[in-house]
Amino acid sequence: MTPKRLPFLSTCVAGLSLPPVNAFDDVQISGIAWDSRQVQPGDAFFALVGEHFDGHRFVEAAISNGAAAVIGTRPLIGLAVPYVQVQGDDRLALAQFSAAFYDHPSRKLVVIGVTGTDGKTTTTNLVYHILRTAGIQAGMISTVNALIGDQSLDTGFHVTTPEAPDVQRYLAQMVDAGLTHAVLEVTSHGLAQRRAAEVDFDLAGVTNVTHEHLDYHGTYQGYLAAKGLLFEALDGGAGSKGVPKLAVLNKDDESYTYLAGLSDARVLSYSLDADAQADLWAGEIHSDPSELRFRVRGLGQDFTIKTPLIGRYNVSNGLAAIGLTAYGLDVPISAVQAAFATISTVPGRMERIDMGQDFLAIVDFAHTPNAIDQALKTARELTEGKVIAVFGSAGLRDVQKRKLMPEIAAGLADEMILTAEDPRTESLDAILADMAEGAVRGGGVEGVTFWREPDRATALRMAVRRAGPGDLVVTCGKGHEQSMCFGDVEHAWDDRTALKAALAEHLGIPGPQMPKLPTTPADQ
Image (cartoon, rainbow, N blue to C red; front, side):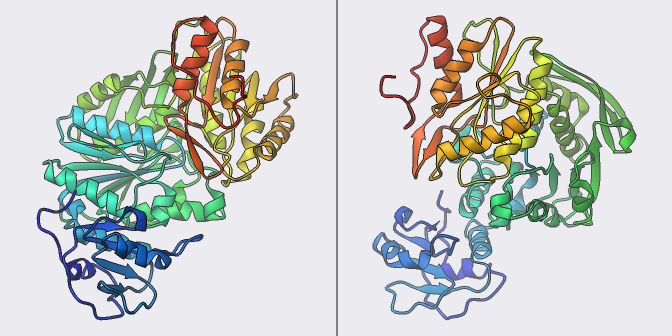
């Protein structure tokens, strides 16, 4: 999307919190790029400096591709186009520049932010569906897609918050479409890298903050501090939009005390424990393969929720969504109940795959210790038979969780098959060896209760073959994702398609073709 009237470079630079170092010639710009290969004629090119790259090395390539201006943090002279040397955090500058380029769209929308380690995509979808069910014109930016009116836009292969120019562009499209509200899923990487820094949030909610991304943030406290940036962005009072700022926090989570102290915005707490003295709490929880029911109490309300979403952890996600909508935005309880009853299963989140087999088959995105724990506890509730889990652990990511996840799973699943999950440039065999060590630590016996199978397709076939009537097979870690990374290459992969293919082969019926990976044996 290009603004109807092309802004000048000086207009966007004026949006920076720190003035530029140098004088520069003004020029109109038609877009923003941070990858020289993606530059279109008329774009402003941001020469970002990252941990493993320096965008200043690609300035000439950007100009060759048509960049009308260049913005960076290092002194450059003799360029064929205007150059702006900015001060401070270059990613914050990119966010501020992008917001100014699109005329600060978030100031024209009521913006709800959702963060957390696990459950944030489901909660974001719930909030969006509640608003739409209540007749509110809302858009959504999640790590799966962006929904703007009748448009659904893919936001990328792997899950994270889009870069700042994309966030601002999506929000501007919402304004142009006549929407009044926006729901934005915000990751810790997105917050730390300032991708949502110039979004004017009105309400913010958290699901939980558990063990994840310590490879990037270093410590749990560093990870928690990144999540906290969303709540620091809330200012007290009604703001310019007439909506009181609100933080919706999970009182059952260790993040509660820290996050509650970050802002002077009003805090609404929720809990699954009636004795926790939270503002909202849930009881009378019932979960089966077809429905989740629970009763919500607090703030003078007492009502029942019924939803096709399954798993007790979705009660917490549901309370967060209810806090943000029914109490944060005065959405009628009847609309909340109708939305829960009609919401579709979120892709790759405890999603049932039914090819006519006599056992349950589920795809879930669980890829953290807490998520594996919750997914397998839910699986145990859904069957009296065996639970067979298939999962891996990503390369170049948090190393500690490689042993933690199978250690937890060993106590919940009857059988588990450890397999590939985005090994990237790491040795897959070494990753599986770490996981096997964790499985043994949790009481697993290799060759009896768990197996290592590098090829994910073969692992799924094995799980399906081992399942009997009434059992449950759950494949975790990939969810809705459409690729798997080996080395530096993304290979087409969808767990849902692969599980359907394994089931169809097992049943001897027509089905999708099993996708192939670099680990796939030559005869398959």
